[in-house]
Length: 381
Image (cartoon, rainbow, N blue to C red):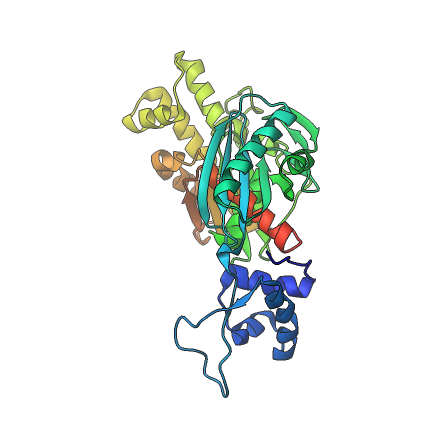
């Protein structure tokens, strides 16, 4: 396979524009990047020679100009595959994606322990199994709930009880492939910014609800990195000072009111019955008093949280994702009413998109991080 040499910042701009939006004609590409035709030719030549970009056939009528019309530039999405992992406390979810992040294969395995070397062994076994069917894998991205340093070391992960684990090195030693590690919410934000709900937006927010609360901010079309990323700030994001107190969060915090474990804890403490999140949602929809009360409080808390984000960040869109977004299907009216109550009467409606995502979407986000770092030589933020 042709090697992709490290790209200059100008070459990266060209490659990203084509990767995210292509195929694009040279005229359109020069317009988007404010480049002269000569500069564009100089920048695209090494990208074409390396095989990262190719001249594609016209899908419709070619651009009108004198002389022979130039062909649009595109990436060959199938020229490389990338492997993305999402690690939870109980499972490892893996996907293989194309260069444009389309999922072409999935593989899930139970996580029988949290010893870092055993986890790395499992990732290596899954890599070998998937590489047997997809031999063009160019790199690995790993998403972990926790704080990650330098795309390599898991500084802290409460779900895995890890501190200062050199996960990238452990997996690289076992697979021989380049490895990128990142906070799982950051990876999801990058994927949605490049290829999903936030594509082309200047101001964009991702809010995730599940085992915890995740938050990602995009300004100027780029994710804003944060030194406190996924260090439990949702636990201190107080929505109702008189709200419930749970083992996972401060009284009335976003974590105590909204996360799946906290909602289950509240219902179990009140009824003595251990119910799944789906059973609680169904009970609330059917009018069961305790389930309806807990889910109603969660809906109002989510509405207050969305209004706070909209009031201070003024995003063009908020994407609500994660395994807990089924809340919107039951308490959507309470969410919307609370948003209106916490916003100026003449404020524009919040551009809210709800995505019922599974852990393969998170794994895809990790693969996008691998594309950004390993192919383009940079992280999106």
